[in-house]
Image 1 (tube, rainbow, N blue to C red):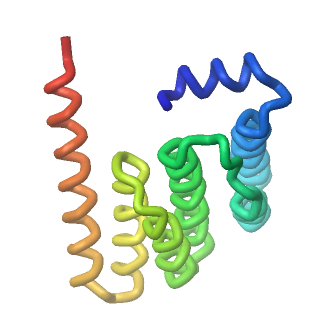
Image 2 (tube, helix red, strand yellow; image 1 turned 90 degrees about the horizontal axis):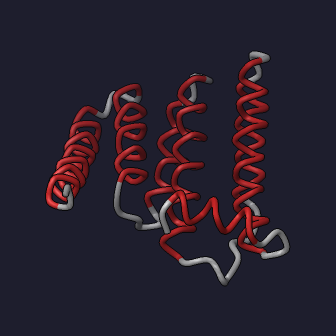
Length: 149
């Protein structure tokens, strides 16, 4: 589901569990933004992790749920890096990658995990993750060019 379709869903059906879950994701991101504005990266991470504990509505398409969850896992892993915890960043990125999505959110997870591997002095794993992110991004670019009117 594209972002515009998700927004339409949020605006049109306030009692739908899918809408509530998507709102919870948005709220978690907003709370994380506010925490970061107050120099509280740990609180930002906690807000996002709390969202990840929520059950995914069964009526939401799996691919849409994966996109949302992978985006949150990426942000959590990135916050881990900011907190100086490369091992947690590696592990949190893996949680997002375990969802087996495909696309931009997965590429972002490979990038943040690659950075974590660099900080953990595992250059081979870092290179492999960066290459996988590049492969995904090249595929996305080719698809965008192919679909361009």
